[in-house]
Structure formats: structure tokens, C-alpha cells
Image (cartoon, rainbow, N blue to C red; front, top):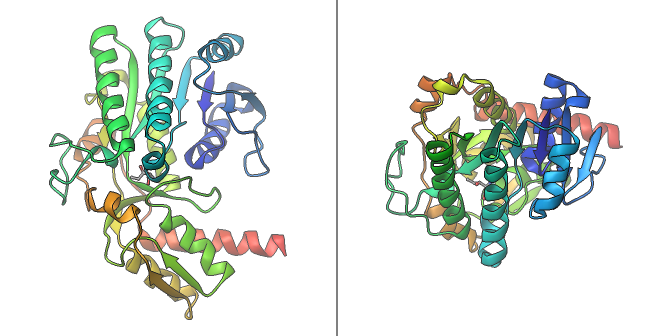
Length: 315
Ligand code: VAH
């Protein structure tokens, strides 16, 4: 049985839906500190604060969980405002789950890391799998520490934890939650609401990005790969495309010719400037067959099509 922790989050919502399609509703238990909304109507739901270790162990036992997808975290922008809370949530949640795996209470763990583990001293273009990682954000520090723990628990206790350094993830169904790349989610929704969007990053801020469908596919494919294929036990670089706010504005203007984007960089610009512009994910492609499906054209078309359908249903 599978437990998704953080099933109401940006990735968790659609990940839970896909896992239910794959394994059946009764084999996928959703859990979150928030309660489900119409966005994420989970068949089997447990209200869970992942820091409540007792409740977590109870849920694992009650549902005979074998695989855990730990999707709960505080993202980069929010974490800068609440460093201690971010460290506690992002770190303690992982350590609790790794301990359960060490004690053989669960068999397999998926834990998302992020390109946020890279910092200003990391090579910016085509960032290699193994390189300098001096993150300058609370979120990046917590993700880098998490990667070190994943590798430690694998090497010392043979824990089967698998991790991916996600780039910015773009979704239409679920809102993004407190990240630096959220502009790329918000801007599409704004195109349907008003004729302009004020972007909190500068026009030419190039960042590695991925469409939600690819992000979900990656989590499921890495978890289904034979154990011996997973040679990187810190976290795999992963990417699909890189783009700037200008690139997205140009895509949207194909559908909304009068759409106007203005740029007012805020504190999140410093975070974005510390991250790479593009990622070398050849290890993921070689080790477990990673292949992305969406580029900026097919992603934009998919988002606009779905938002059109959603808005026509709503009206
Ligand atoms: C964030 N969406 O912006 C997340 C992600 C690489 C970005 O980690 O914090």
C-alpha cells in the first residue's frame, strides 16, 4: 500500500490521483495537515501532521503501508520568512520516515529534493550531477541536508530511498505554494482573469522547469525502477526545459494577444539568481530511463486547453 504525505500540495494532489489510477483507490492512502478540497477528493484520507511521529506510525501500521511518497515541505520563498519552521518541517519529516524505513516498518521512500541545493558558486549552465552545492536559501540548505541523510541511510542501513532534484514545476490544476517559480503557474491563471500580470522575477530570469505531468511520471518511474539501477542515492538531477518569464509571456500572447506582462522583481529574485539556468540530467536518463514529454509549447497548449475547459464548466 502507498501513503502520500502532503497529498493536498502542488505535486501531492496530482501524484495521488495518478497513483490511484495505477494501484487502485484502496491501495493509495492520502494524508495532509490540510483537509481535502474539491481539488483533491481523496478516497482514503488520513489527517496527518507529518511531525506527529506517533500518528505517522499509527497510519503506517493501520494501512499496512509499504511505500511512502513524502511530499510535505515548506518551499523556498516561504522558508526564507520562517527558517526554523522550514528546517523543522523539511528535516524532521524526512528523518521520521527514514527511521521507519530503517526499522523495516516501510519498504521504499520517495523524497523530492530540488535544484535549490545548488548555489551561486555552482556552474550555472548544464549543471552537472556531481558539483559544488553551496545553497544560500533555507529551503536549499534543508534539501541539501536531506540528500545527505538519504545517502547516509542507504549506505549504512540499506534504506531504499529514492530522490529527484526537481526544477520549477508548472501545474494548472493545483496552485503553487510559496515557491520562487510560482510565477510560471500564476501567469496562466492571470491570463484568464485579467489582461495583465505583474511578474515578481525579471524578464530574463532563466530557470530549469518541468510540467507537472512529467514531474509525476518521474516520481513513479524512479520508484518502479529495479533497486540496482538507482546508482545515485543522494538525489538525481532532473529537467525538461529552461525558460524565462519572457518566453512564457510570448507563449501566452499566442492565445491572448492583448495579454501584458510587467516585471517587478522582489526578494525572490535573489533566490532565483542563486539557482542554475539549465541542468544536466544524463544520470537519470542513463540509470532509470528518464525521458521528459513536455516542452514549453506542448505544456502551454495543455494548460490553456485545460483552463479553458475549467472556465467554461465554471460559467
Ligand atoms: C520553489 N517550486 O520554487 C520550488 C522549487 C526549484 C523550485 O524547489 O521553491
